[in-house]
Image 1 (tube, rainbow, N blue to C red):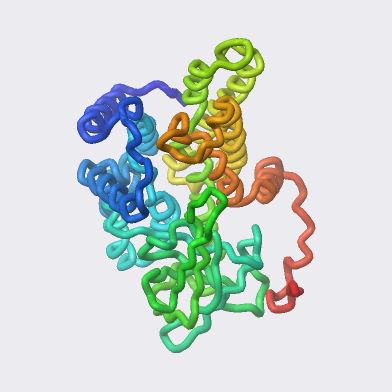
Image 2 (image 1 turned 90 degrees about the horizontal axis):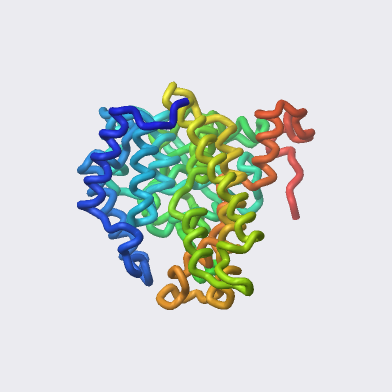
Length: 409
C-alpha cells in the first residue's frame, strides 16, 4: 500500500485544510476552550459542529450518498481525521452512534429504518447509545438476561444494562435482548432499536472516581416496542451484535483526541528533571521511542483495516489487535505524562493544571477504554483463536440451553 497522497488525495487534503482553517481554531492557538462546560453546553457544541461538518459534506465521508454520506473512500476519512486532529473541536458524542449503532441499522434495518434514522444522525440531530453489557454478564455479552417477550405485534422488555456511555443524553439506542432461553445462549438473542425517552426506560448515571458520570445504568420496566423495531430476524441477535462489536473495536482501537507521542515530546522539552530537560534523559527518550513505535504500528494496522473496508469487507480481528495496544498505550502514556509534571500532574482543576490536565484526564479515562469494546483478556483470546489459529478455550456451556446454565447466588 502506498501511503503517499495521490494527486486527488492531495487536492482533497488541501480542501479540508482550507475549510478547517475557516471554521475551527488550531489547538496551538486555543486557550481553555473545553474547560468547565456543563453537559448541555457540551451537547450543544457537539451538535453545532456536527451540523457544520454535515453541511460541508465531511460528516459521513464513507457512507453511501443515498443515505446522506459522501460516498468517498476510507482514505478520505483518514485524511479528514488527520487534519481535524490539529484543531480544537468537540470530542464527538456521536462516536457510538455513527461508529457503531447507525452502521448496524444500515446493515440490518429496513429501508424505513434507514430513511428515518441515518440522515438525522449524520447531522447530529439525534444521539444514539449501545445497550449490551449487563451486571451479571461481565465480559460475556451473550450471557445477558434482559428478556423480551412477544405480545401480539409487540415485545415487552424487562431487565438492566450497565456501563452505557452517554445514555443520559441519548435519543435512541440499540438493545440486545434474550427472546428464547431454551436454546444455547448465542442463539436466543434478538436486537431492537428503542426510544431512550420512553417512560419505561430509566437512566441512572454512575459517579466515577474522576468525578464525571460518562457511564450509566439503564433499567427497562415493561418497555413495549413494536416488532417493526427489530433489527435482523428473531434469534439472529448475535449476528447483528457482531456487526456492532467489530465496529466498536475498530472505533475504540483507532480512537483519536487523546494526548499522544507528539504531545509527550513537547512536554518533555518543557519539563526539567534532576539532570536537565526531560527530553535529554536517556530513559525518557527510550519510553517515548517505545510509544512512537506502537503508534506507527497502530497506524499501519488501521490502514490494513481500511484497505479491507475499501473492498467492501467487514472489519476483521485486526481491530482487536489495535484495541489491545491502543488502550494500554493510552493508560501508560497518561501515567508517564503525569509523572513528568511532578506534583502538577495530580491537579484536577483544568484551569490551573499543566496542559489543562490532559494527562490526568487521560489516565482516569484509560481504565474504561481497556474494558469498552472487550476486555484485554477477551481480545487476546480472539487474537489467539482467529488470528493465530490456536485451539479454542474449552466451553462447557456451548450446547446447553441458556435456562440450564448455573446462576450465581
